[in-house]
Length: 51
Image (cartoon, rainbow, N blue to C red; front, side, top):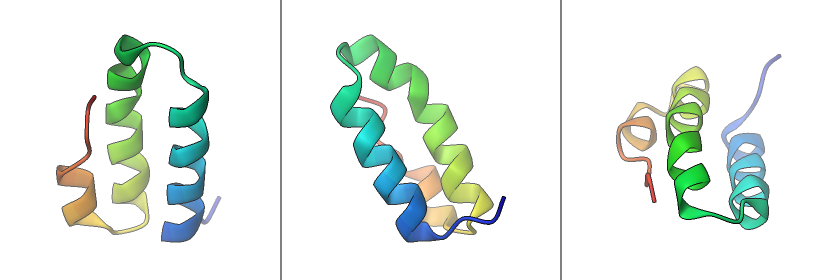
């Protein structure tokens, strides 16, 4: 599935607002970095906030 940077950012914002615990947010950090990498936003992928 082709995604744009805006799609990825919208998805990340919705997930971060719905995840209750900081531990779960940090566990999703790698997945968020992977999504940014797939849309060729390499700098954002390297600098994903894990917490």
